[in-house]
Length: 217
Image (cartoon, rainbow, N blue to C red):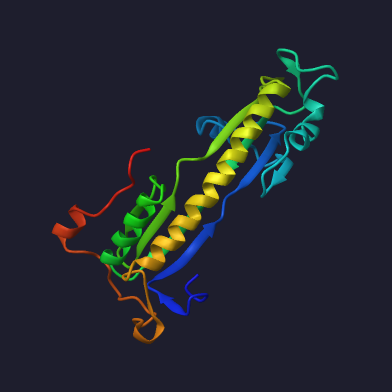
């Protein structure tokens, strides 16, 4: 966005995803580590459906057809997968800031735009800002080889994911506009600081004690 406006950002992007991934993933089996994390998959898992746009419920149900009997779901219906989950992955961004002041400015923008799970990580040589929201969704459809969701419930989950798509994009646009309005984050290229960050970003003890941390959901 900085390039589009002819400006230089006071931030360096480390990684990021626009989110908006509506996925259905299945695994032949779950590992103990996955169970401890409350959902993950064994490495042998496969994607049954992936969309980066709002998805019609019919498309999701078509991908899940093997899970359900011909005339609707039955309780504890056998499933060839040990675990099946429908997920929505929202926007996430990790950036490196030049100074703690810049990092705090970005954090304020993120919180104001609805990314309430954002925070600052202060390292010895880097100041990183993680921009995150709490819109993640991970709903099990089959557990232990038994289907635990009905087609009607899948339709409800799909509608919920699609609503999250809309809100996710709205927040991204709000964040872009907020960054463009913040002088500390978006300065004219001619006045931009050198691209190389200082060797040590560690703040004074008094400043570190008041640095922002991830806000509660």
